Amino acid sequence: MHTGRLFEIVYLLQSRPRMTARELAERFEVSVRTIYRDIDALSAAGVPVYAARGGGGGVGLLPGYVLDRSLLTDGEQDEILYALRAMAAAGMGGAALEKLAGLFQKSGDGWLEVDFSPWGSGPAEKRVFATLKTAILSRREIAFDYYSARGEKSRRTAQPVKLVYKDAAWYLQAYCLARQALRVFKLCRMLDVTLLDAVFTPGPQHTPQPMDPAEAPGPLLHLELTFTPAAAYRVYDMFPPEWVTRLPDGRFFVSAFYPESPWIYGFLLSFGADVAVLSPPQVQQALREAGQKVAALYGAPE
Image (cartoon, rainbow, N blue to C red; front, side, top):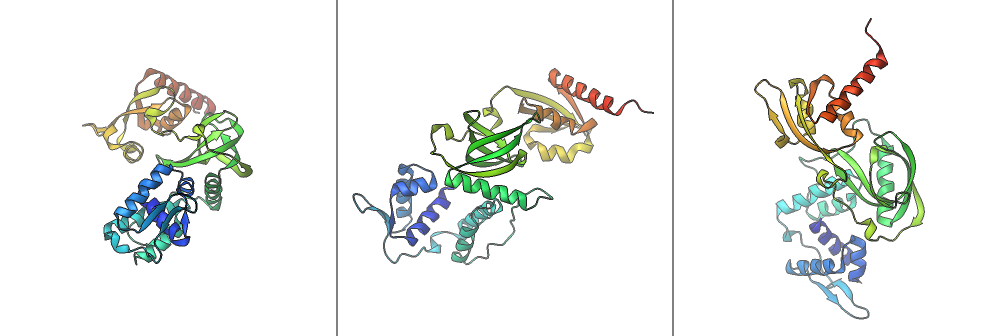
């Protein structure tokens, strides 16, 4: 992100005489001090950028400067294009990808293609991304219907802060006006997303929070599980390799930590008879009760 910001600063300054450090800081959502560090980094790389203080001052480029692609190695150019290609898959960075691909005299095509959309997704999902991108960048509120992990539906109004892709799913970090707190919403459970006219000013309450399970509110469950060989493909899909131990009989032992929530029970039930919970006991009991309810739903075999 740091390298991408440096390139965008250069492009901005090529298109206008000068910008103030505060304007650049607001555009990139960083501090003025960070912008000055970026200016120092550009100067060290040989870019003729200057910062003038006082009335009529600001940050600018010396007249006639053209970005020289030789400042970057071929490998560094490829890394930038691959990062932008990943952003383009989320509906962002497409214009920058085209410009830099032209500057580097590369097609932008290659061995890497990123597509975050699930199989069978249509234009509706792309519209949601476009709406959220507009809301985040223009700092406008949104309204939407949301289904919680317990299946409860509610209408929310929120001030969106950040989109996060984690563990094969998209999430929105947003300040929920009803809860008066920062919340994380799973995009696939957000329906009827509407961009509102109300504009908000970011404050301390909008600071993004870590998405790591260790930072999640509530207790963590230490799950000890065994899976049959038939579930091997899902085990390696869903768990990091360091959590998985292959047993001599072909089964898989998994030691995992997850926040306690209704989601974890549905996740384990999705494996059917291919998973056995060794611990903790409360998870064993919850799955036992869920299995009894399913059996009662279909009745005794004839």
